[in-house]
Image (tube, rainbow, N blue to C red):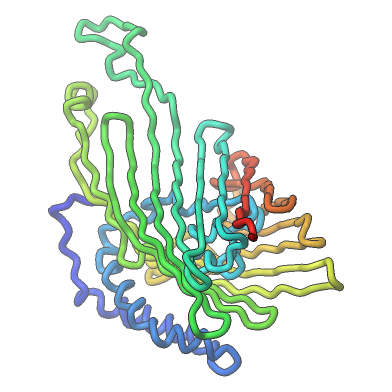
Length: 398
């Protein structure tokens, strides 16, 4: 985080960064000419707009933390988590509102509901999510999502010891730390065959008991393109950067913090820089009942070096891959790998570690039930059991 008064970055000072990001986008777009002319024309039309949005946020890189609003990177839906989040190109149900809003255009039924509950870190924290999506007409779809990630019943011991040094356990109270996101989504099927676009407007609210809170606002953009058995997708998160304005109730903290030598927090602004996620997949069929989807995604971050396979001061690239095998559109088996990192060994050497995930799904008529065994944190934190539901609702035919 940085203090509001210290916000003095300029676009001019980051001209070199802008040019390098521009070259990266051109390199990404170029291979799609020819056979995939539809998606190329779309990217050509909107690449400049996206580049300007990236630049508008990236000029504050020096003051921005790496993992702002990181709870939104956890993802939603057990299907996606079982595939290690590699679903930007293939997600076409209500959970696409979070992964790639362009996919909402292909939801089945007139209205679709999705919900998930997960207990993370051995039940210490809870993650809850719900989406409602509905078609406006044959080409347009809207959605609304709510996410809460919180830790409840945290002991508040600020008043445990009174001014005379007496311990009074009756003074212990509890509070919650929670992050909320309210996401409004829009998706449209374009006149270019196979091409869908979408966007999100999201409101962020973060709360630490009565001690501090923040409000923020941001935008996401997405596109999906399908040609034959090939699927492609792109999501630009926080395209204009998302700003969270923090305010603190220092009256509750000042006396105890001063006595214990802790720094009293000041009102600040936290910035979430843009992230670009690209994905490509191929879905093949074996007979009429067996299908296999393989998808590769790559997360591009512009906030400095990260411990990922491709890392630099300008951009870091984090690949992850997922597989989904289906039988008769009834049962699905999923697997994926993510968090590919280099770690130091005890003997001073280095080794590569990966995070595997697995999942299973069952479709019972209009209801889909999905399960994933996934590690939300890192390889050293306990795996979590994640369950999610999707329900399709259609109007009765007269």
